[in-house]
Length: 297
Image (tube, rainbow, N blue to C red; front, side, top):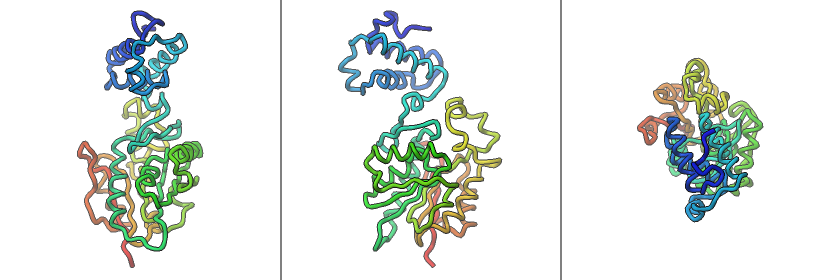
């Protein structure tokens, strides 16, 4: 074992952070300095301000053991979010579990497009309703409920563990009274009308999963990754269900993998949904959020 710093168990918080950053960098881990700060802070229960204020404080033997445990897990390519059990999404904190994906910044594109489409809706006489299919940690649904204060949302998932995680996140964010969570395949247990239906479904072709980074293939749940032989199994199942459950004028917004947007639009059209705008690109310029509307009769 390489010590946290030359002074071993007598390390200060700052020297422990620097030593860990050096170890991560030597192992070829990107963003080594950021990872080290997050891991040391989580191990000690300190935010950035407290770490700066206490930079010279010596670690206790128990703290050294915790930091070293986190270090070994990261050196084995376990993602930081998995190690600390949480990730920020849309500026909100989300707890994670083994059954949930780590929310990624790319997925915020789905939230952005959903909010744009919601502003164009005309809803009268009832509160807005949102469904999140394959909700996982609840990140997309709860971000939307946070932005649309009078809305009610339902999240579905096959995993009971994921639903427990989502319920806990709803409670922690003060949204439990406006969110419900249901175990089912896609939208099968839901009845409409919904004004927005959102989803980040599994879209990785089965044969591509072994080629993913170790952080993803070894730690993200395969149920949330595997999109079947061509990556479109979930979309084929979801599109007709969404079309049945959308309110007239309502919108479906889904996340797409690289190069998938055009085929997803074709599946939407086949379900009698109308694609009336181009996909929304993420920060890397990849078409990431694809949408379609249910036209009024």
